[in-house]
Length: 401
Image (cartoon, one colour):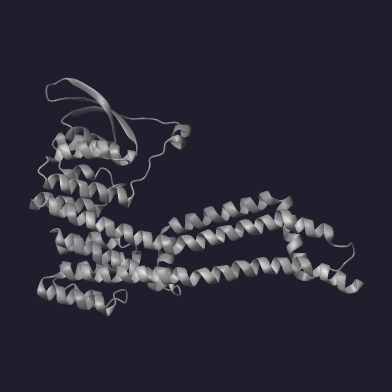
């Protein structure tokens, strides 16, 4: 986040100066005002490219955020004033980024800012859902209860992300290991076999392909490296573009096996977030605006936005969800019952728990399914190379015999 050096005047008319971190000059001026000062001059701190490369802020994980939220709720429930609790949590945090952020939030709150207002200056740490919930807790006077809900939501999000990581880290690790083995064989093993082949022996097509690839890889390796970098950066740029995001969002739900997993993950996030927001006192339209983007799917976000527009026109939430293929009948049925009984947050929590259990079961099953498949693929790849390299030797031995 950019830093700004400020010169300001305090309430007594004395000149003060310092620096603040903010996303823009307007946000920096607002932060200075919340500290009780009148900004006179703001100037961005210029950093060299080298210092920017060296500067690294450790990201705040969901575990760190969940622990902070739960501790803040416990301290407030014990009667400790908010500012004192924030300063204490900032000092004891093991994450340096969170430590700095909480200390600055404490300064802003002490200067008269609201907690949710101060947290909005750090979107990289506190999501819109988080700050909206905090604001609802401040307005409703039930901040401790809201913090408890947020801590539970953060723990569920962390568990869901851990399940996704456990399903993907094994195949990624195996593919990386197989790539290292392939490169090692091409650089070191294949040349040894080439020296063993008698001159003039006719090489089978698989052997010829492997030897040609090995020679080119060892002589013009830099071309392969450049090509890999170009493809990697091109793919990354495409996936970050609007077209790429939409394309991946459509394709991932249609993947065999993994498509159902991605759909359950998206539904679990949406239902859990919407239940947390509604349970925290957020109105249905505002809750839908926040829950859609946090689902992690563009299709889900647009579907929820369209549903919100129809709810604003007086329709129930059930009807637009029922007409959308992204929402299974169980979800729409539970939403309908929740709207009729007034227990929508509780029923959405049950749906979220169901899909979270489904995700957990599927990730364990996928790991068990993928493991033998990857072993067969890697073993087959090595076996093809070994057979291709030994074929000329077998031919020579047969001819001699």
